[in-house]
Image (cartoon, rainbow, N blue to C red; front, side, top):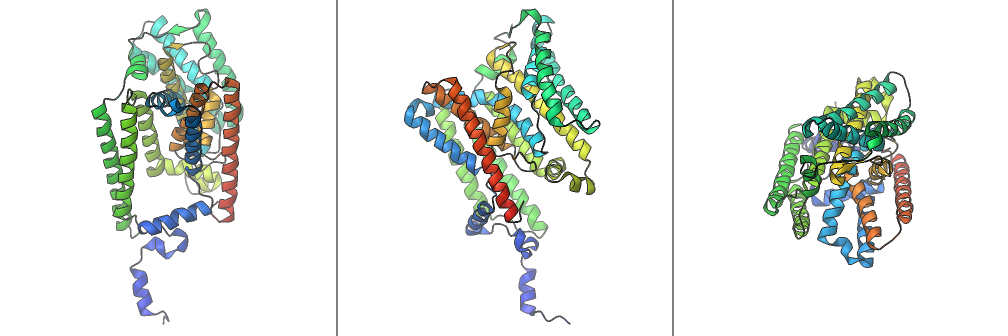
Length: 421
C-alpha cells in the first residue's frame, strides 16, 4: 500500500514528464526562461555570448577611432568579403564537432578554384561544367580523407597537413606556367559574388519570411513536445523572440539598404548556415555527429554507424572548402598561384573556434562560423581603416583566437564541475 499523499500524486500527474526530473527543468514563462539562461551561464554553458560581447567591444572600439567603420558601406563590404571564408569555416565547424581538424581547407579551396578556372578558360567549357568540376574536386578529396581516417587510421592532423602541402603543389601544377587566370567579368560567378544585391523590397520580404519560418518551427516544436507530455516554451516567449528578431534584422536591413543592400553572396552563406543548423539540431545525422564528438565509444555502443559519420563529415568539409574557394575566386575575379594559400586556413579555423565551437568536440553550432568570420572580418576592416600595419592584424587575430580557446577551456571546466561536462 502506498503512503503517498493522493493530492501530491494528482499534482504530479499534471506536471510535464521532463519537469519531474529537476535536471531537465526547462523554461516556463519569461521568468522561468530568465532563470534557465542564468543557470546555464553559471554552469559554463556560455553559448555565443562571449563572441557577441567581443563583437560589441570591437565595434565600439573601432567606431570610436574611425566612425566610418560602422557606415553602411563598411557593413556591406564586411559581410560580402566574409562569406567565402565563412563557408569554409562552416566545414571546419563540422570536423571540430567530431574533435578532429582539417588543416588543408585553404589549399583545397585554391586547388578547386584552379580546376574551375582552367576548365572554363583553357578547356572552353561552360561555367556550370567548370563549377561542377571544382565541387567534385572537394568531394573527391573529402572521400580520400575519410578513407585514410576510417580504413587506415591516419590521424586527421597528419593527412590534412599533408594535404595542405600536396594540394598547394597541385594548384601550381594545374595553373602551369601561365599562372593567373582572369575570370570573365560577365560570367555568372563574378556577377553573383560581386555585383548582385538583394532589392530593398525583397530584403524586407525576406525578413518577414524568416520570422514567419521561425514562428512556425517553434509552434511545431511546442506541438510535438506537448503531444509527448513534455514541457514547452510559452507562446509569449516565442512572440517576444520573433518580435525582437524582426526589429533587429529589420533595422540592420534598413541600414545596409542605405548603401547597396545585402549581397546575394551573403544571403547564400546565411541560407547555408540556417540549413546546416537545422540539419545538425533536427536530423538524426546531426544528433549522431554530436554524439560521436561527445563520446565516440558510447556512440558506437549505442548503434551509431560511426564510420559513416566520419566519412560524411570529412566529405562535407572538403566540399564546402571547394565551394568557398570558387566563390572567393569569383569575388576576386581571378585565380592565381596565391589563391587559398595566404591566411585562408588561419581565418577559417580561427572563425570556427572564435565563434564558439569547442576544440574538444561535441559542442558548437553552424552559427559559430558566421559569428566568428564576422569578428575576424571586422578586425581586419577596422585595422585597415585606422591605418594599422597588416602585421598587427595577425597579432590581434592570434590574441583573439587564444582568448576564445581559453574561454572554451574555462567553460569546459565549469561544465564538468556542474555535472554538465
